[in-house]
Image (cartoon, rainbow, N blue to C red; front, side):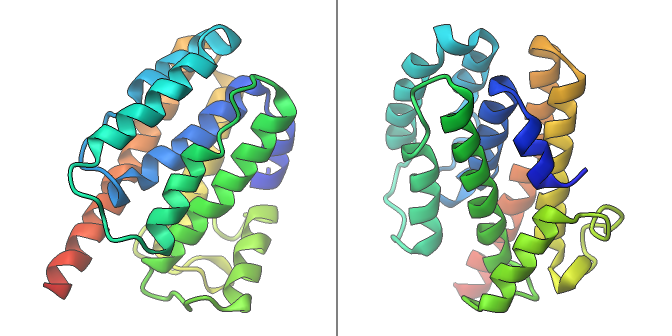
Length: 204
């Protein structure tokens, strides 16, 4: 099933976790602390009872986790926007809009670090949109290989993670499903962290 359809069918729990996972994987662009959002993950278990309080706490925690203000650029601004735009209301439609936005933003961020990236091109944006709607050709791509429609390996890997996390949450109820989704997202965070580190070393 395509990513767009999975987001359309997800419930509040799946949508909140999907959006949070996208943010979590992009966290290396802002902070060195990998677990700063873990309390917010835990809050998804209780849903409406805990979401707004933990969301506010996560914003404060992320602010303090940024030891040195990173140079503000398009990617860091996008990561800040992902958390800042999270709805405090535990309701399907605002959460769906947030999850969909986070999906697009995360893919765009990964595209900027991909070896085959075409910075700012309309064609690249169109390719990302097509991949979200029809992921059949990307599903079998492996990290390190170019995916469907000419997208790079980072984008293909991120797309697969987004799909798999939504599938896990639909198949596995309660805390076990969230733990699996979080573990899957953590692996993606490690991938982006390694890419960012390599680029920093190359530019130094």
